[in-house]
Length: 177
Image (cartoon, rainbow, N blue to C red; front, side, top):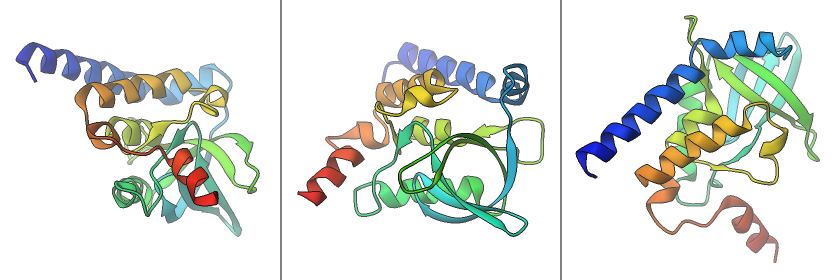
């Protein structure tokens, strides 16, 4: 990649990182969006994990994205990234809806002990380890930000954008046929 192009990519990443940093919590509060805090548990795959709050447990499905299935190329990498972000952490959950499997679909943030938060969906998308899920991203409060993160990964040709990868929803459909 040419030096100018890299500079633009880094500038874009920096701008998005600033948006996704400490400002997320203030933005959610200003929009009247409630965040629930849970202890992260088992990572099931690249877009699903469990959380617990006292005796109550939930399965969380990340809103607006779809990561490769475990059997697909990059599926284990997506799962590993989610594990590195949430395992043993208190996570902020912004509930959106319940899916047909009864899972809580939500945006997820990890504080990491400081004021700056990490938006889990953004991290997966920018690493090229998930796709924006067109059918469901509209219901997510930060859908547009997710699209921007995916565009950066596409531009950098990382992860799923580095070759001819089958999208997870197409893979699941083919498995059912």
